[in-house]
Length: 167
Image (cartoon, rainbow, N blue to C red; front, top):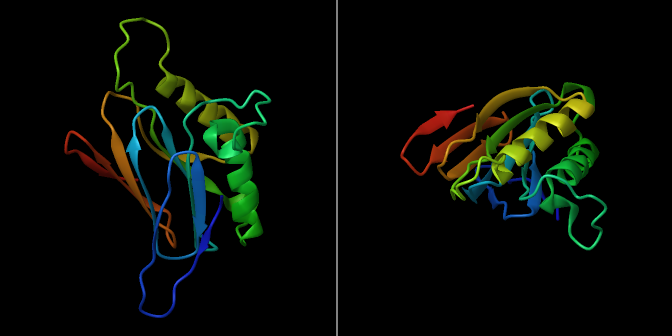
């Protein structure tokens, strides 16, 4: 369920985005934590000062209408784009940043991890929409927390190994 967050003068607003959820904001911040194989996908328009954060857990919906579209990378991105444009963003100037996609559990196989498949699905879906990915902090074996400044699209990633990165 999308939420448009706004603030009154001198009031800071922070919106927590849960798994299989997303939010759109024109000010304040968006945060999500517990990103293992899940992704934190930020889509923003720096000209209109509006950002979104999506926290999907699986790559493809594959016609599964019994679950929320935000649970999946492909349909979650589609829904998020519609919502950010409805909130005033210009689709032609949207940019994306991707975080997460880790392999936090080693199953001992050589198969592509769910995190890898999520990242690939994000690249494919964003490319289909013509949205360039301008920042990425993905893969590895560490969980992440993500913080997005809605007005600028600046993303701060904190990994569980203590490494912090700004995108």
